[in-house]
Structures are given as C-alpha cells and as structure tokens.
Length: 84
Image (cartoon, rainbow, N blue to C red; front, top):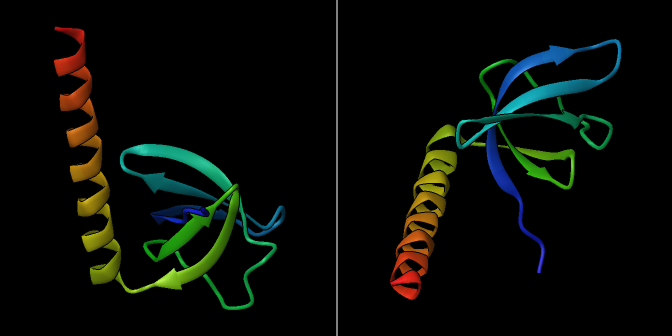
C-alpha cells in the first residue's frame, strides 16, 4: 500500500528543484522533479517517498491531516495500554 501525505510548501529552491515541506509539524525536503504544474509557497501537496506528487486543495489537505492525527493518537493510546 502506498501512502501520500498532505504537506504544506514552506520554501522553494528553484536551482535544485527542491522544496521544504511541513508535514504535521516536521519539516523535510522533497523533489519537484515529478511535478508538471507550478507549486508556490503555501500550497498543499502530496508527498510520497521524497517526491511531490500533486497539488491538493487546502480544505482536503486539512481534513486528511486531521484523520492522520486521529490515527496517530489512537496508535499512541493503544501503545500505552499495552505497556501497562
């Protein structure tokens, strides 16, 4: 199963065709080599294995991120229960 994570573009380096993305509060670099459309600072994109795959609507991105946060919270709670 492949998972693409919604991320917000923080900065763009046109010389290297790389961006810095914020993904759930963690910043990471990703390549724009697979993108055919223009990406701007503040855009939401889908990140998969170090590559920006597509731009997405901000509302859709925020809904997806809320779902990811709920999943992470649930996993943390399960882990705490197993540790006790």
